[in-house]
Length: 223
Image (cartoon, rainbow, N blue to C red; front, side, top):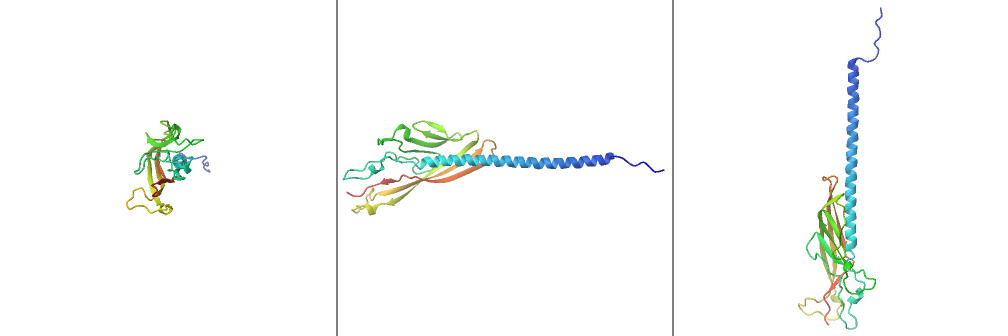
């Protein structure tokens, strides 16, 4: 008599099949979670770098305007009259690096040769946020602590001088402190470091060099 054929799976085969299926599902799930974590980390890093670059660009844009004077030609001597002083040349810091910078530039439609309340500007680091000075005493947040915590903000000044002795008709007296006149080429090194508010382990930084467009003339030719 022929024995009946076996139908279906045995318990052992079923257990093996389930184990293999669970292993495949677990592996696929692990790979998916890794991809999701990598994608999230990339988004956080991209957002942080975008915020840092935006802040650095805004700081650089305003710094370039420092010292702008609507009537800069008044700073040249005419017909024996003394040259007028540029009221917007004040700049801090002047030598050492700092986490704050202050400067001025003219916004007058008609130059009045005076620094108004709305012509004073600056940036500073305060409680993880870079703040921007818009007029006298009016500080506004430039960065958002909800997306980025600024851990370091540094502004380092640099001044290069070019002698203008060739423009003087007479030679300077020996030991003269303010002769010959010199043209000061001013620039700032700006460095910003921040960490993501969503992931404290994501820390990035940016650096830029800002050349001020408005040079300063110091000293004078002998009379």
